[in-house]
Amino acid sequence: MSAALIKRMLTEPDKRLLWKFSYNFGYKGMRSIQKFQTRIKRGEYFPAFLFLSVTNACNLSCQGCWVSPSNPPKQIAPGTLDNIIRECKAQGSYFFGILGGEPLLYDGLFNVLEKHPDCYFLLFTNGTLITDAVAKEMRRIGNISPLISIEGLEEVSDMRRGGNRVYEKTLAGLAACRANRLVTGVCTSVCKSNIDDLASEKFINEAAALGAHYVWYYIYRPVGPNPVPELALDAQQITALRRFIVDIRLTAPVVVVDAYWDDQGRALCPAAVGIANHISPDGFVEPCPPLQFAKDNIGDGTGLYDLFNQSEFLAKFRSMCCSTTQGCIIMEHPQKLAEFIRTEGATDSSGRGTLLNELGRTCASCSHHQPGREIPERSRAYRFAKKNWFFGFGAYG
Image (cartoon, rainbow, N blue to C red):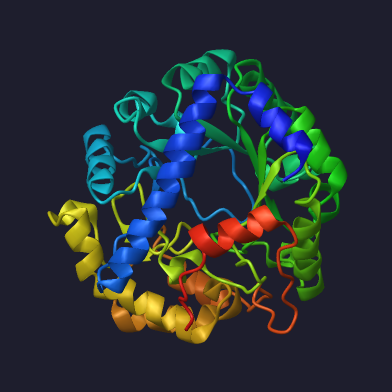
């Protein structure tokens, strides 16, 4: 990691928040991985991390979004959300991704998160609703890191997000986080319309100047009712993105995050590896957020530990994915995925009732699994972290 990054992390965030980030997320995150690996060796399963879509309400309408807002909005009840977090803590899992829709539209969210000062919460948000008061509340609670989505610069952002002046409003939210000395991230779903602008040293430096301490790159997946498949990256662009990530990590003044490659540059799918699962606003337990099919629901009366260990659907999904590809099965094999879902009789948990038809119309696209084109990590710190803490599970044999 660069000297600029170390200096920024030591001087910019509130010291109490930095301690929470280092201990609750860093140390406890490593411990949760170790406990996950121990469970796997015993033939047991419980994810190290859990992603929770607390509501399907949103103030934007993004291309390729899998969430369909409803009226009234669906949401996980506050008491249920509290219980989920407590059950995960009992298994040594303390890190949660809080998603929507837009999670800041969930009434009482901070009241629930405040009850768990021993956890760490990554808030996936478009940033447009982060005011100074909201940022102050996150600083007061201390264990929330806003991960603000930027999908392009001014013109592209409005087109991608289905709004007006979205980029300007997002930057205002980012400025509020910086003013309140939060540990803050920026994420982007890289596609054909934004790769040149966002997968660049200029964007990394601008994000750092605006107060971001980490930048998380995803690969755009054409899913949902408005998938826009023409935005999906081709094989050369995915390779270029991987090379950019590996190279920029040596000098970037931010942590550069991905969840697609191991320390040797081999592709992986976090859902197939089993590191994480997703719970929808309706309580459905899904392999990952964009894969909105399930056979298990937290409202069925089964405790989370038993649910995860007894779920034949999740186990079969992991096995099927691992035997099919190390990349994203949604992108590479949508027809096989649809057939698996039909065979299993899984419920369409999207709320639209059209997901099988959407998969049936989806053309296969390039994913990050490109055998023979692996690019190993150049940074010793990232290589060590990935090898020992995050993706060294031997999931693919």
